Image (cartoon, rainbow, N blue to C red; front, side, top):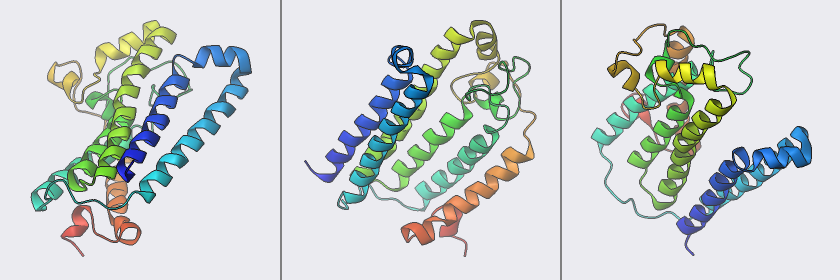
Length: 230
């Protein structure tokens, strides 16, 4: 197998074991091993498969880009990554989808990033993956980014199903005020743009600037606005 195929095998192992352990196998394993034992097993498998994926990606030889990447694609990716950074930072506060968020999910008005989507963190990772496919179209990178995209978006859908089972009243009420797809709740009038805090807007801009600048020392080439500035 070539480098991209090894990346694909490792990605299937990483994403597949995550879904299996997080959903169909979780309850029987917890019953057998206990909560602490399950977390230990999950952590070991996740670390091993993630390490394998990282090793396979770094070992994959460079391939020819599958399409030309000009300033137009870079401009689109740069703007989308700003949106992703705002979603990510906004999702760190009062996120009812996170484990043990400090109470039942909020079923009042969806504000800030939750008016955009009830899964802002997952969509941030998905947008990151899509942007990296767009501007770095090497086979191994496309495989890795697709794995992240599937993990994020399928994971968000499976999370909805789990929350519906564990919190049938509060989560369904939250779903009625929000949307899985970005901007769908806004388009249908179930939510409105309001309540974006500084942690989302200012924090998102800072993360966007820092993360794109970090490509210069880490990858050896400029990303984001740093392609045109500095």
